[in-house]
Length: 196
Image (cartoon, rainbow, N blue to C red; front, top):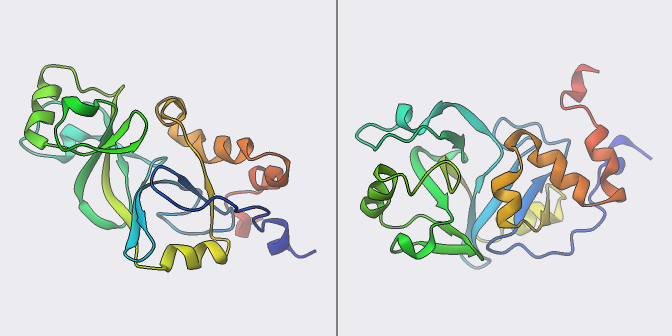
């Protein structure tokens, strides 16, 4: 068995759709997507897909990145290579923010920015219920499915609790571990395999 076969995805029976996560295969060597976990915000096969990388913290707070924004000391995350100068947010505040889009039960994408700023200023929106992302990951029609066929990603589930409570630096290995025995080798594979 060659090295590539040891890391092939054994079961990718879940279909990509809003609220699922994509776990990158361990051989992916890419600044944005290596060892990444992407939360799918939308997936329409005929139109395309987009999501945000949820496990790559930046070394800056939101207040350091955005001018004229209420003081929010929460860390920003690298969301993806598309529109990487734009800031996006995911939260659990639901109907408190008009125009929020449900992702999974209890987790929402965006919404009315002025209302959101007020909630930050009053302390209702905080690091415990909100995450900010610079940029996003996007796929044209059919592109994500093609990547799944090539075993670039594994589709899996995530809960609000896992999203909020799993340390970002442990997300990839934690979600791989939850996949069970067929994926044990993934977590033992070194990040910089070319150096070994």
